[in-house]
Structure formats: structure tokens, C-alpha cells
Length: 241
Ligand SMILES: [Zn+2]
Ligand SMILES: [Zn+2]
Image (cartoon, rainbow, N blue to C red):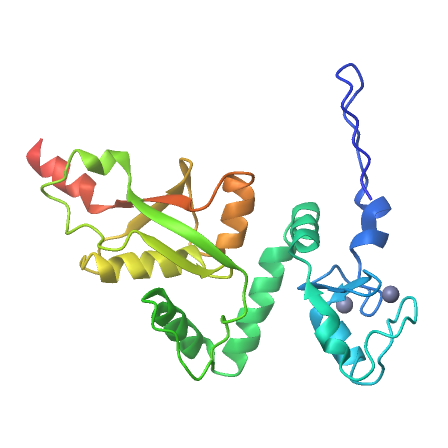
């Protein structure tokens, strides 16, 4: 699907998104893949919701008509994360737009509070055994939370450090959720703000971890290291200086 050219003296190959569209657009909804899902029998890819809905009426691939399975076509579907990452990288704002759309969907149904509560619960490792939460089947990201170096100097003044530095959570978790988690775990007063950095880039509240990973941690090993910094460090150092 892509053509790479390694020769140093050639200008970099430029691809127009229009030329790639046929590879990253779902024929069922004519939009970019969302939760890209591939049929194992023929390797054709669709949005998850599109193909699941389609297979309620048919047991054949909508592109090539191959019979997917005698009785249960859904068991021959697989999430295609590589394809989804390609789409998110090629189409600016698609991921953010999709996250916003999901948040609005939940908010309109009064589910947003439930959603964030459930998510914080999952940080502590106590997953709801009934399985009734939205993030259970999500792609996961491993994080390591460390103090920002600017705060290392103030060890004695900073609040208790984290007992559990490593966490795993959904890629849909936003920076703001990690900030809330830190406020809770470090027992810092709510008025103090927590800044999060990845590779010295400050992170914004609304950024989902998927985006942070793609923007700052692509190609590096897990866990992704996030540095936290308490806004109070400024107040504390002003006082001492
Ligand atoms: Zn679709
Ligand atoms: Zn097919």
C-alpha cells in the first residue's frame, strides 16, 4: 500500500491523502476507518460498527462475497490496530474528532460521569467483575509516572510520592484523567495543578493517551514515561527564595 524510497539523493516521496483514501476508507460508511476491523478470511477491512451491523444480515464479506463463517461470522473478525494507527496518523484530527463524538454521545445520555468514575476505578486494578464498563475491550497503554526533574530538587517539600508508578489503562484515557488520578494518589489539595509532560512536551487535558503515544512516543518501548510537575513548586520556591 505504501511505496518507500530509501535513496538519499531522491526527494522524499510525497503522498496525497486522496491517493490513499481507497485504502483507509470503509466502503460501508464511506468514512475513514473507526476501530478498524479485518475479516481473517479475506483481509478486507471495515469500521467495527459497520461490519458488525452488516453481518447481522449476511455472512459474506461486503467487498468480495467470500463466506466468512458457516454460522458465526463475528468470530472471524479481528481488530486491526496497525491499520487504525495508520489512519490516525494520516488523517489529522480524526482521533480527536472521534473522541469528542464519543464524549458527546455519552454526555447526551447522562453517562459521562459513570464513564470517568469507572475509568478511575480501573486504575486501581479493581475491574468491575460484571464486566460492565466501557473500557474493558480497549487497546491498553502502559505508563510510568515519574516526577519531573524540576521537582526533584524539592523532594522534602513535595507531597508523598507515588506508591505505584506503573499503570495500564485504555488508550482513550485522557491527560485530565491521569491528572485527577495523581491529585488523588499524591493527596495534593485540589487547587494545586498538575502538569504532565511526555519527552518535555507539555500535555493538554483533552489529549487522549493514544494521541500522546503517537505524537511523542512512537517507536519507543513501553511503558511510556510521563513526568508530572506540581504547580505548587513555584509557590514553594518563591517562599524559600
Ligand atoms: Zn465504516
Ligand atoms: Zn473480503
